[in-house]
Length: 453
Image 1 (cartoon, rainbow, N blue to C red):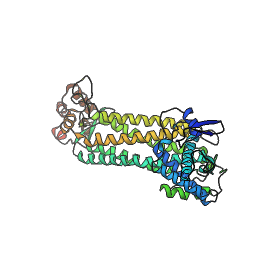
Image 2 (image 1 turned 90 degrees about the horizontal axis):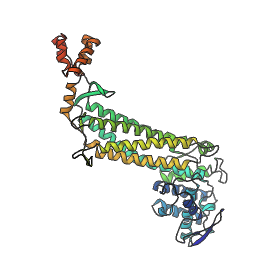
Image 3 (image 1 turned 120 degrees about the vertical axis):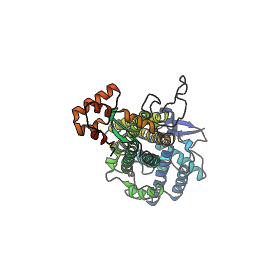
Image 4 (image 1 turned 135 degrees about the vertical axis):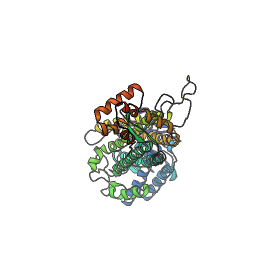
């Protein structure tokens, strides 16, 4: 064991550990979720530390020897090494200070090793004075958080593009399937199954556009603002110098906020992103509901489409197959909607110069991205791609409905057509059959057409 000291006192740290005293205390204090920081978040923190080491060197406030060691250490983390040394729970007090210090300590101790020293010899490379030079958790943590979201967005977008394209293909496949449309779960007028699926294509396309717009909210960062946006303890030119470095490292079109005080205390941009995810989730859940309804039965429901049978649906009812994939898409959507509430509350609860609740914001945003991305993938691959039209059932439901009363009303008036429709429902006879009893001329009945455009 090695003995390390902080402002609270001394702690023993295992000799082989790259983390230090601050991390050790945080692990003890924040045993909340049982999870560790997201992999993309760890990489993003290391990218920020690498950029800052290089910027501080260019500005003459960090030696070349330390810059080189910190850069190499950060690059190892970016490449996937030492992630098991990032131990702090993602939900933590201190506005993310523990995560920032965890990465500072790991980078410092690895840099010390690279310089031939022994872990804990912070005279060689210090977690605060060198790795965190010119920085505060309050600009490091949100910058890394935004970089993390910029890593998550393309993964979700890829799955949304694939689902969008599947719906477009299905709309073409089902273009000639005329069926009954429904409003308020009651028989309405004809539509094609292709038109229904094209509507799903359109709403997913719109959701993608919303996400693309929300992505821009993540491209403005407060790096260089340090504690409250005034840039205290940082070189006056740090923001502009580090921006170029970070853009080159990440490939993202980042910019420094034009008001660093505002960017440090106000975090509604995460709400904008979460709102876009919520809107997508709502659309996906509605589509999943439709698919469950349209496939219901198979004998006594609507049954106009068939979805792939993926597993037994019951432990007691033999042969029962449930719509498990649409059901899981619903549940993924519920989670995202709930997370949106948490994110909104956390964003609102900031006080004065800082919002201390970004840890829960990032935790819930990351969870929403992960669940929605995987949910969309399984929805597309295990359900939507395999949907088939039951053409006979579509035709049967259409013929048994009262839809013909609508074009008939144009010829004989709404009131008479309504009487015919009610009698059709009560008797089970078709609208055309009953219309003849009302002395509607044959030429009128012969000219009634199924209109779907």
